[in-house]
Image (cartoon, rainbow, N blue to C red; front, side, top):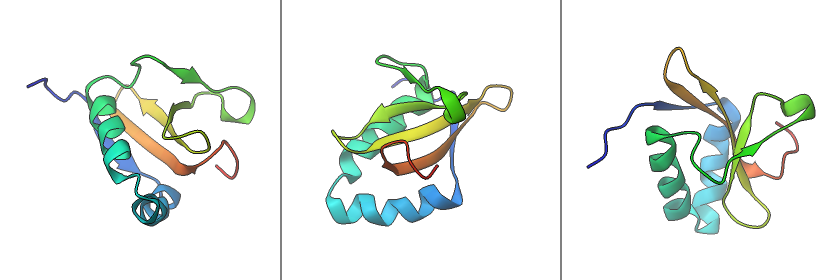
Length: 90
């Protein structure tokens, strides 16, 4: 088993997104992504966001939705900003 190096924390908005993820049936996919982020938040493919989301990264859940997150390297924390978005309303 691979050792987890990072802790996942959720923004208030991401906490609300959990209900949408569950209702849409994406729990397993999201859980897999979060497990990988705890080991290496920079794993490929890595989408580095630009503009007002500079400093954030994203992982694709499906064609429409992404997990948008930032890495707080000093604290070894991956902060999930949103899980039900296509880069809007972050």
